Image: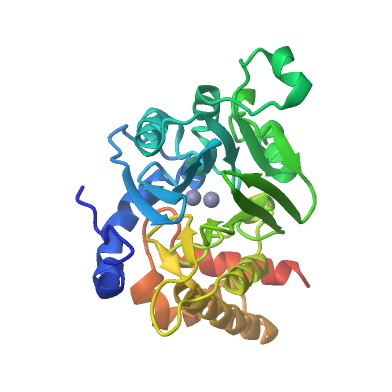
Length: 341
Ligand SMILES: [Zn+2]
Ligand SMILES: [Zn+2]
């Protein structure tokens, strides 16, 4: 597949609308990779993914095509990844990372539990090595794997699966979890904030803010390829998604009168800036309000669907087929608003 978006930050402003159009081609491919809702109807997708690398800004690059988008931060301390793509693409991800840096993979951060973001955890962390300081260095003999950092709900979901899911082997589990609102690390000369957003896309979402590079990794709280995806079964809610989008908007600073400033890597789709997230947040908020009004009027889910509260946005975000259709989105909004009563 040809790369359907601009290659450099410089090329991006002129090509925005083209990129948006072409993004739909990419979207179709990326959505095929999002297996978490589709496990019942498919086996593993064919291993023909092409992975593209885009330098975003500062020390951060973006890998596209492995499942969910992957962020790679490189520097003198080694390599840090945010998410690892689908399991079957792990070798390709490792090959792309090697092109960016010969350093050891030290840290992996997971934005959430879904397999298109964590599937490569086991293989990629095994290829790396945790930094062990001081007196402990001798004790582990250098045989450890890269640290996998995530909110504790990610570990809970992986290690206590319901009867419907196959268990995730322990090699892919987070090895360093946190239960607070935020975890900070310092790596490659850069402060990195890992910010938990409660009950959004799932109940274990984190956004990752590279402060020096000025790049935010949104995970699936923000995707450019569909309406917001709310995994109700794994603790998601529409209000949490809106809260997460607002948090990203609050952290991001736009360049004056032009695109750029803080860049935002979505869970799926093309590279964005603050204005893109504002637009998406507004759309999400408007649809939430419409559905909320309909609920107040006592409308049933079927009546709400029939009233088409998303109609004016459907040409951009709507879908009647695939893993996240407009009907599924409206249903998720309806149920998560009704749930809070
Ligand atoms: Zn995803
Ligand atoms: Zn997801």
